[in-house]
Length: 357
Image 1 (cartoon, rainbow, N blue to C red):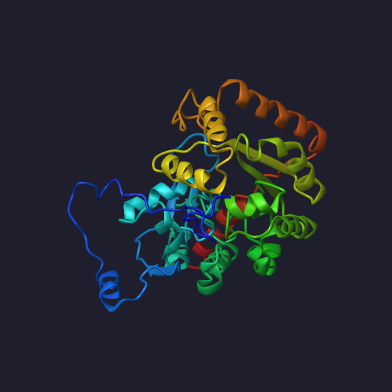
Image 2 (image 1 turned 90 degrees about the vertical axis):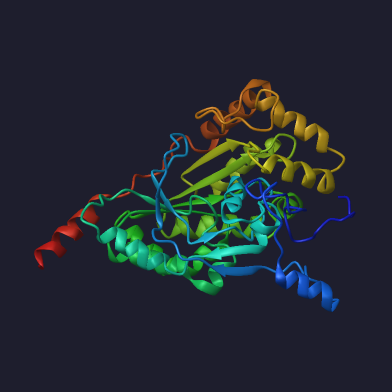
């Protein structure tokens, strides 16, 4: 790893310009100006928590190839700092950079549990699985401080409503008591992301996430408790973790996962530049090779926006990845499947509540 200008403990190594603010008007941060005048170091690589006040919290997912209908995010931005994260681009809508700002300026929606309850109480709402979170990790470090995810799970349990979770943080085990209750009625499904079995790779690719050992342990504990787990072996990045597919599939299967999913990395929007800058600093000896192999999966570009193809890739390298995935499923998941969640109890709950009035 090149030590030149490398920011330890972060994924992105720079704050790329916000495309919505470029060429508009000059902005000035009074706090940073104060620090400069006083001779203090403004940037200490600390995380800021910024409260925001949305009017709604449940989002309908219109992309046909994402695999979910509804999602909700208690936090925007993510301290995990995964360098490849597609959600980085959304930080630009809030006026921040998708680079370091995405990891260091975490937007907190304290009203999320109340907004969720309001949604589930609506007469027009029909139960559909809502996924925590479709954008950023609901168990990122901010959750220790704010407990928004736990409060939302309590709402789901109270209203007997199905919920999915996507995370790469073992903090989910803190809420095992609620998850067990949801699992009794098939109201919970968990997706745990495992992208490598190498701690060295994990540390530079996903700097503030749980260790691989912790993630596999999390899959095992959840599975042993009766909570179905799908492992997310995503993204597969040629030249970084593509050679690990078989070993990854075996490891998550051995620890109880009942299925796994994958995507081929695509670097959309500002992420292409952020990833390119990162890999030239973190893995300079193979940066060009990895970038070229990613381009080979997307017709010569780092990104492909076509639904159904964008996350699967095309070409020789993508085909090799798909072949390994098929072999892995046959070898380690032949008699396993992820169970469907229960969407009936919520409607029954609402019917009982209406009879009370």
